[in-house]
Length: 252
Image 1 (cartoon, one colour):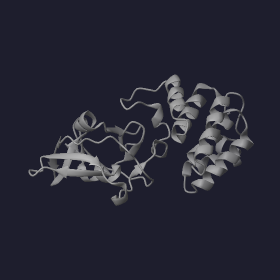
Image 2: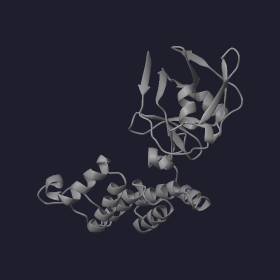
Image 3: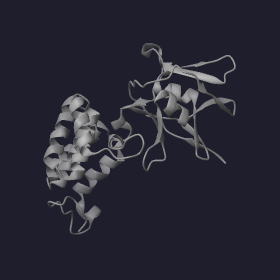
Image 4: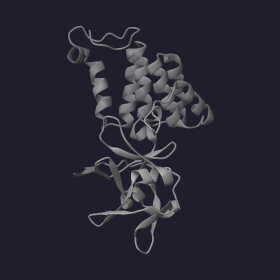
């Protein structure tokens, strides 16, 4: 049974991925050229990954990803439209005369009309916490990556999230502050900052960060819901309100 999964596409900027000049086998479906996800990973270093809990697919390089408009699933085989992949990752597709093989190379940036690229943090803030093969990245590995890439705000944000999960709130706050200095105006950073503060029971400080995140992304329902819950705890958490003790926020 053939299932077409239609996906929304994110709109942000610039992505550089390894692409293969070696020809990849082409599969035609409904007159459109597709390449198998397995071939993309093996030959081009591009992994097609399903986002946890979202039912969406992204094409991922070593550090950055781009949401795909559609992926064709045939049993266990994933077929990726060449046109959609090229648009999302700013690639040029060169077919042979028979159109049975295609070579993918980075397109000149100034001539590209691609709008589908996105930072990992923009697509899924926790994606840095999972390797491309689906196994978790350890806290030590994240610390080492952040040390190698001190100017990478997404990496700093991922490390902050991992530190928060481990209970090291002071270190998580420091990473949030570093990420904010590197990329002010990015809603996921103050939102994460607010979550860490909430874990410490600093509700008012957390509300300041959540409000800052909302100002950067006014339409984000998750941010607005978090603010509403803190401003109206009796309605969201019940008559006893919210307990923000050392263990973090929880229902009474």
